[in-house]
Length: 215
Image (cartoon, rainbow, N blue to C red; front, side, top):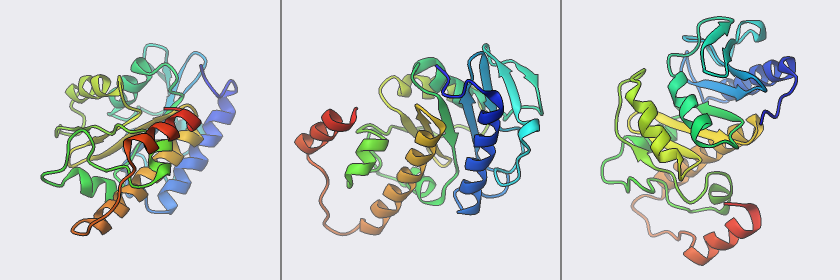
């Protein structure tokens, strides 16, 4: 179900959130893409567009089968977004970034592929969940990435792509953006703490967060 019955409102929100991410350094150049679910299709940022300088009238409009029907040509990574929408019916938006700290973790050797960022804070669990799979490397635009994301999304609201960056879903665009921001901060904490003894949340503490805030 779309959280934006008014398409004009959805376009305005996408441009506003994208510009905020760009201005704060979560996306650089033409990296990253954002989408929202509409009542009868999807909006996604165009290919080779900067999140800091989007035109709401030129956002790519897709039909319910993810076929372009209006606007500029869509991001070449539509399949990332489609994987979440088709696997997680509650997903109303998807955010893909190349944010520095999360991408740094995605390039580390020896991290746990099932939990590359440990549950250090309750906010990570509340916004990302207990699962954040690290997927193997795929070249940008490789459609095989879509199948890998869809499989991982059955049990996770977000994934890390090796040497690439995070892809995060949310019930609303605000939720997805907040989760992407929290993931970046969690990655920063993890990198700051590497080499030191640190505490992670325990199983019972995570279960309590999931009970109170949803899992």
